[in-house]
Length: 269
Ligand code: IPT
Image 1 (tube, rainbow, N blue to C red):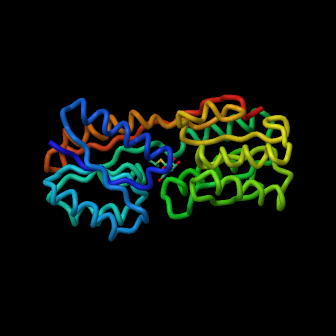
Image 2: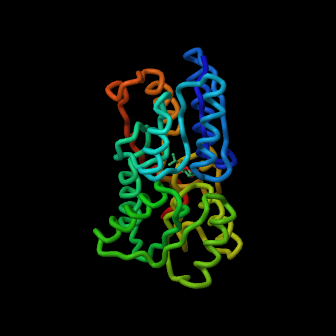
């Protein structure tokens, strides 16, 4: 018996940790996993990947690709002969999904910085093409405004360390007065730490950094990263369980929103 996983780039830490969990829990249930990684997040490629899985008689597929609600709905209805479960969609949409609360961790991270006395906070979000990146950004901005604050500046990276590094350098040139930066994921935060080190900026003495994902590696960054932790292993586990429990009627498909929580380490002060 086989289930499918259509995933965005496994060069990224979060999707690769999710894929590892999907494989582990599927294997424990006696299932194999066929993984199809797509390069660009275009519907055409996703459908191509699904067709390939169908040709191998796979009828249950986990899709870990950032998708707008409408795109996900289309994919689900175009493929109603199989079960599609989505991992990177708006958690409160009607599509069958296992995803993370986009607001609880972001709120906790803004509160954490505020209580440490930070008022000049910069934002380095993920790509504009990612629903999750947009939801995190919106929640940061809403929470800041609840404290009467506006971000010093808003940048977008593409999730990798290089883009975080470049974003941080540009912030240092254009709006160097910020005292903390909220970053859309740990890999970009790694690039930010590197840029600050290169400029001999003390972390957290001069600037604090908060990541997002809580990937395994983030506790080994220097300094160890304060981050919003997603239980990616649990997401993989829940996705496999809900997919295998799903029947062909909507009734048997229940989505789930997992919590995100702040882990305070040494990059904030
Ligand atoms: C999201 C990660 O937070 C981010 O770091 C990046 O890896 C992205 O995935 C890739 O699409 S997690 C997702 C389930 C919202």
